[in-house]
Length: 579
Image (tube, rainbow, N blue to C red):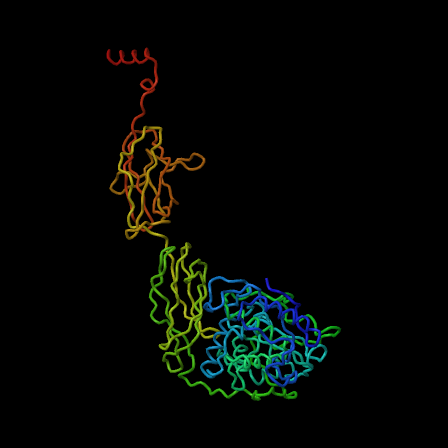
């Protein structure tokens, strides 16, 4: 369980003791040689202190929970997503996809920055609890706005309204907005369209994560250098305590994370599902009124008609992001298409032999590399990709194609679909129909050779069978047993041996049978009936394999022969002799 030190850190001297305790706990949780954040007495690595309104978040409050003392993975192991991990190390699928996509995008335009996605994850954790545990829609937009308290100078920085409430719904003071908590004036400069829908929305995790990545890389920073990374974090929220908290999550995520479904991430204590991320604007203050923000899904808010004062820039940071050239048609994602995937059919419990493959196309119809694609299993099915995942996110190669992991059928039969979408975009998905059929057997045979006989009124000994499919034991195969006539076209026989259902009802067809893990099936308690003769039993498997066996019912031994007295036996014998 995470060590907790209060819900928020407030700016000011009152946080010193809390920060010192946090650092002590963090130090205790790391092994020898692990990096430590700066101490309380160290000077910030960013050098001169920027003014409050120059920070991306306006130095808004943030969540102060530290990572658990136990790490999600051993130091030095792969940071690829393991199947399991602690709850705190889980990152919602869309949120994680946005961070990784941002790392790829920035690497393609500013490789020297060396932006790690774990840094975005650390900032997203302390700013919004990973968008309130991943409560976003299919395009990555928060289901309701995430707003910080009014920055009215009472406990926080004083930043008067700069956007006429277009982004934050507050026309008096600015508020930090969205999962990465940008103040409107910073978003107006640094906002990005990370999901390619033509809008720059601070409430969309793809847009917000890309904006945060560009912001952190400003000023030709190399984030592989500790001093540059500290500068970047402090430019986001200029607080030593904030730096320590982000650093602790950064190191934690570097040791391993795992993906969890959207909406199931761990929330910091006290964070509800409401619109505002803070219950108040500070001790003894009254929050500013909060008009309704722009409708969800509306066009990009218009810039304020009367701009507020421009924030001052921290040292070494340009006043605006470097210009990004408009993508050419060959660099623009136009859509996805099926790259030759054949029919998807598998028996219950088996892997699909066909692999799902998709190709990303650019504006000229050619292949497009480095496109993030989400494969998702949909419908009422227990089929899943390798590792039990119903959703996986992969990137197209140089030829524009990407192949999903092996898909494995579950035990539930029927049809379902797999959808491939360009991650974080509203482009049409490619849908693949898939079908799971019942387990089959191509042969079934009785395992014994002795003659099957029983006296009338008695029962037959247990009869064993084994089903095979492609010369391997066929487990879980449905089998039906029927007493049949000896006609050219057999039908159910209404005479002779029978099965008995609960309640004593006689039946001559028994359905719902199934072979065990070794492909075996044992029929027990077959009643011989009252009429002597030779009868036929047929077993039919799912898949059409059949076997017929003979059941012989012998006349019952007369009572006198079995146990009558000597006189009775002699009389009977004399009678028969006289006759």
